Image 1: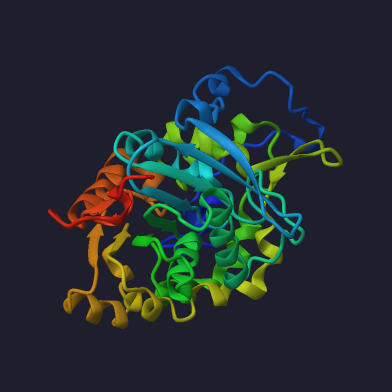
Image 2: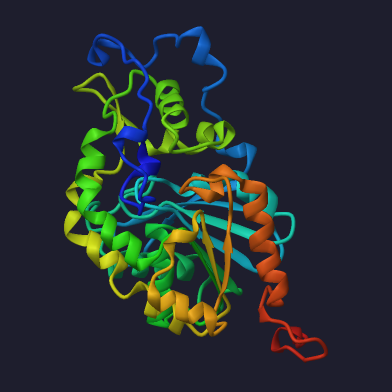
Length: 350
């Protein structure tokens, strides 16, 4: 399975049997990354750069540490839709979504610790507290003490991080929370299978094209356009093995997995901002969330005909759902906007 099937909760029918493996070369170790790819994959599965979707990228250095987090940014107006990817993905998982959302809001997609182009002192510290602190630190470095309204959008593991940021109540400008395809009960139940899933996925790729092809043909991503931009940053070239391997060493972070999801439902429900839960299947709700939904504590939408990575599989529908959520809750660049109400931000400067 490819990075997008990683440590994130899978539907109950997901297993290594579901993957349709593609035939690997006789020896991937002998393959050179610069070798011309086969005609069949050279164009269809060729990588696409982030510039096609985002306006710019940047490295954010965290004061008082050696940590540098990579972000992709798009848009110039409106609230900031701050996107957090799942385990094994990168900020470019939101590429196609960003190109749609940036027409009406700003987008920031961050490479979490140990992922993408981010560099940190401890790449394997994927504890929930550490990652949530990283997010708040990046927002502070980007916007200072007066950040604009932030709508956190988190997919899978990133959804848990987003919920934790909300629970910590350290982000005063948080105006909305969108959690994508992660529910506490299902996620925790799936953890016993994760090491097996990680070990059974293809580990080495002779080229980036082959990795993109594997992710699409294996079914973990259903949108070739998204895979072409999102898969490359999930890989790194290993000189000793002469091939591409996964950039994130998820199998070495098992001690943190349960912590990602413990108490997730209660923390989500208790967050005092508008909330949206997007699911790829109806079998995901646990008892706590079912009661919460009946009480109208959050909005829930089941997005049909997608896999776990909803934002990649149906980016246009995903973007519309996020923008509708922002509009429905009247979230403007400075927070919830009530018609006719004076805002401090409107005060003329001296």
